Image 1 (tube, rainbow, N blue to C red):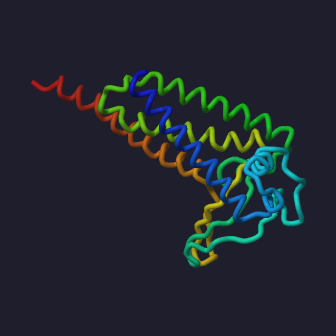
Image 2: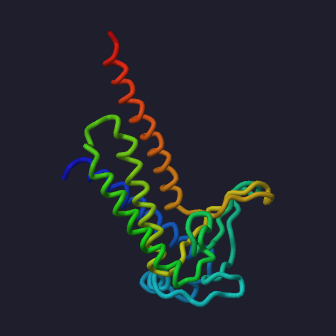
Image 3: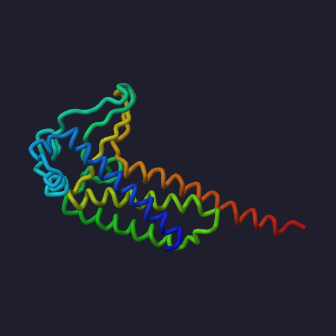
Length: 205
């Protein structure tokens, strides 16, 4: 197997496993979903099975506590996001939102895989894309697993400023996507400048 595909599989699978593991821990520690389920099999069935109806707090899994990592800046709090990043499209009717996200997620996976297949894996200029694309792929699949299992994504990382301003809750998959997109932006600048430098060198007397 070419080295580039080893990178793709290793990075993407690592992101998926870490994402799903942290979501399991969050549901176990911050909600009541597993309270009457002592075995791992029962907990996984509850996590990936049909969720209960929405409760009075607007959540499928009832929250029981949160963890203040830094009281003024950061906490771990269970949240559910039926929409896209930052809650976009969450107001769409379920019969439209579901197919829409399935289509977008599958298209993203296909596009990322296709773009990655075009990389040679040997050019040093490709290193940003070589690592960025697997991060985005792993994050996209991690959140897609949530959508398939329960039609909403589990978020739990909450950054805020003295509770006066807050960044929308996110998770490990979202973090991987943001870092991956950042690397792809660097890749776009690096590989855009390279042809310009080569052209400039060719026209010099």
